[in-house]
Image (cartoon, rainbow, N blue to C red):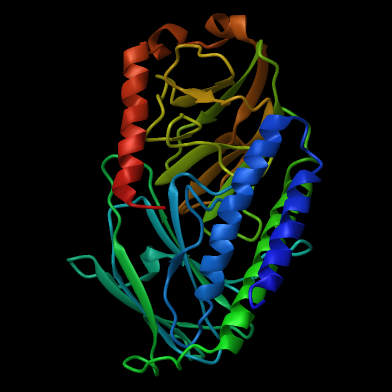
Length: 387
């Protein structure tokens, strides 16, 4: 059967899910099977998009195809490229907090993170009064509006990042190879389809193994219920810093994470499940940007992580996850961050919250107001039109 290599990969992928070391109960396993379904969907899509001569942007991850502690505030696109060809990227800048570009020398693997060969945001672009821009990537030489592709360049990643979900709007972006515009790829053949199913299987297995290994690299060696100082994101953008950690909380415990409201255009906090993917950020408040969060009079954002509803505007819902991952990102930076910009984490009993939060009374929110916040999240994700 032509599809047999992919069918074999799906069977092996299920074994990876069921044997994952963090699986402790039925909820973990159910979420694993849901993660598997999204990974199967994404792998088939990515294999079909593996076309470097007639490239197109595809959505790398989204609510249904999560991976790699995906940022709830970001829309991710990528296109496969080759280092000896020239590519033209055109688009219209939306009103999102950040628009960034990154060239990688490969894909993530269970033993390695791809090198970032180039990374910049739209401050490097020539954008006209209507928001239109054009940028070229190719073998060089570099110049205004032209970025030289280093040897080994294999993937162009674009991130469009929201801070205010309700008011910011997407732009538009497209890509073509300069010397193939107007041509057409050769007809599909049985050999090509066989190759694509085989590639899809490899993508699926690599995707699962890689991001189950990531927490061991970057999180699990840290003391539980702590977060790191801000640091340049490993394998990430030159204009992005992050703070990472992992939590484990009982029903009667809470974490208070206090972090200064940044002068960076984008600052966002999120939770991740033990599968190293975002938790449900559409129907629950499992992430907050500086624009979404309540900022106390002293300029601090105080996030409260707990299972039970504390009646607070900055409650970050654990959605039944006793353990998981935490991350803060700062993007579009114009300066290095220091420990003073980073978070302080305090483990308290749930019933201590009124006494441990200096502005507890003014931070409270009525249940109907909470429902309005969730409804706004649901509507904003719908407006993004992401899958």
